[in-house]
Image (cartoon, rainbow, N blue to C red; front, side, top):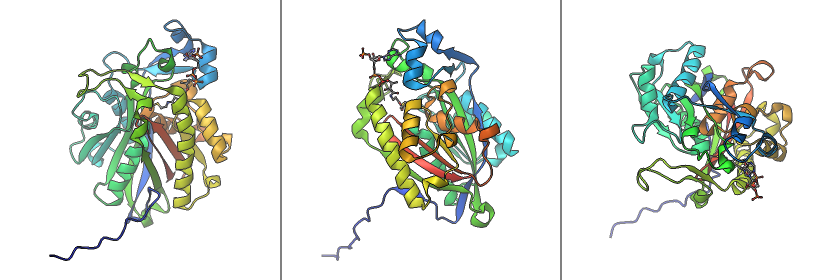
Length: 343
Ligand code: ACO
């Protein structure tokens, strides 16, 4: 009998990926896009049994944007990506990786990222989608970071884009008031440690627990119903999981990266509900003036919410070089996570 190879037992790690590789993934630019049409709380009160007071008190949302007929997730993604590319002074030949985080792809396949790649005229590298619903952008950022840090790709467009208006049950007042459409994009660039001078993605913590899949899901799909389906959610339970799981994720991340939460210059949370934002910030001891909130004017744009919020940081909340930015999100799965970036 051959000698069995003795494997060392797996070390129990906290699941944080801290960036100790040769390369750093540095944020070059940020772009955002919102469709033109606005749907206010007053508009919704004419569609379902709700009112502005209930929506404002329970969620903080006042309005959301809705994609026009014939305007698809890929169109929103392309618009946000163009803003980011223009800001960085880059063109299609400069990008070799496109990742789109979305739960509302144009089609079941091909990946929306390939449609975006084609519309932008990018002719090299790879393009694929990430499906982690509202947490999608954190998963996409971490995925891109891993590829860049290993030197496999050079420059990535990391996009969160959604048309949740297409999977909302517009007769369900418990969910239809919460969501909106939009997109946000980051250009992430591979740089050596020397070039990056401390900037870049410092680490990410990703988690999923399918045990909670029935709390937030879409009741359709190609393999089950052959329909697109509608979003279903046990809102109050998702709320509780969001506050505890996000707080735990951020604490784990900060400790593994070796930073104090008091070092964070900007906290850019998933824009689901103002009460969740407030509770998480309070839990983590992050002061209000460092918390970015766009939920009042965008609603929950799922995977788009974090990059879109980042793209809205101008004027008093303008990100300066060297700022430490903390992002987080939770969504269907449940899947959740957080990431730290030095800008
Ligand atoms: N207008 C008026 N009343 C309403 C509305 C509405 N739009 N929606 C629900 N209600 C009623 C309910 O029917 C219920 O009435 P009842 O007591 O007579 O039965 C009452 O309001 C309370 O309902 P709850 O669901 O307990 O209200 P809650 O305070 O939990 O707020 C909300 C609901 C806003 C959905 C909240 O639970 C929430 O934000 N949850 C988190 C959602 C979220 O963050 N999702 C993120 C992930 S999304 C993703 O991954 C795709």
